[in-house]
Amino acid sequence: DDEDIRVDLRSASRLKKLRQAPTDRVLKGAALEERLRARFKATKGPQDWATSSKKPNALAQAAQDDESDDDDGDLRVARETDANVRAPSKSAISGVAFHASTDLLVTGGLDKTLRFFRIDGEVNGTAGACHL
Image: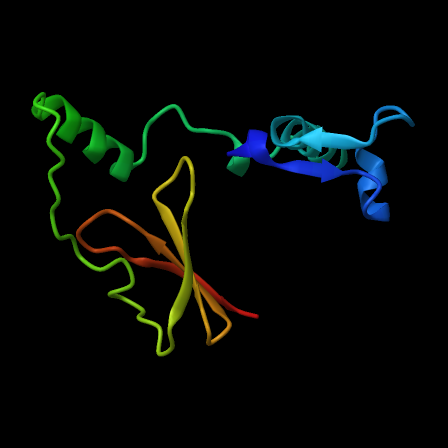
């Protein structure tokens, strides 16, 4: 998907910082991501939370276990405990995202509150909330 993205570095003044040469004009998605990561690292330093962990999170481990048990290519679907069972939103949820290397889920809704959950498939405890 990122290769379909093209960003004109001249379209906004804040993008000038991503230029490596005055002739840089348009970047593809992968090149843009590489430059953004380099810029972030140069300004903020390495961030422990952004590095991938060596151990897979619970969801990735469960998916891996399921794949190893079933070699016929069928997809098995199981109903799990709702992720937000400990702190349900009183409004519609408009966004959901999983962290790439931890068991963290964030939901955002029309009540302008981000809710964080530790996903384990059973308890799904809250990890915090932030009202914007």
